[in-house]
Length: 122
Image (tube, rainbow, N blue to C red; front, side):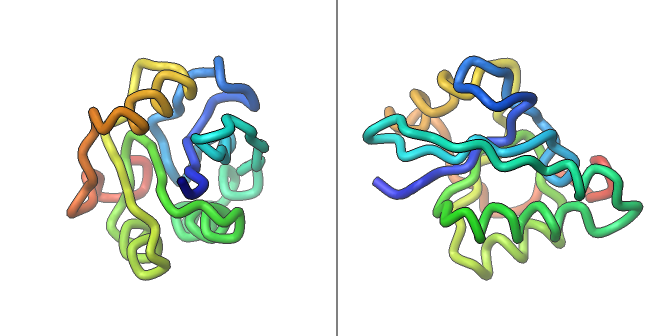
């Protein structure tokens, strides 16, 4: 299985999924087969007045993730991620990173075909 990125409120598998994509605290980038992971801080994008989603998309792609699990993705970020070949799974909320990975591995979540946010923080 390829690496996946999950928006996270903290650096561990037991932290909550952050429903925000562009302004997430960071990304847990994980190999779902081995459950080895690393944390990518998204602090720089949090302070940007515009373009946070594009910056976050660049972070996900640079980390080598082929799938993204998050709550909400705006149209520009959705387009950037799709163009880079990243599979997007949206509407992931109210669970830990570990629970999101488990759902992904079991096929309980659907791939997004369109953004579910207008951008600029939903």
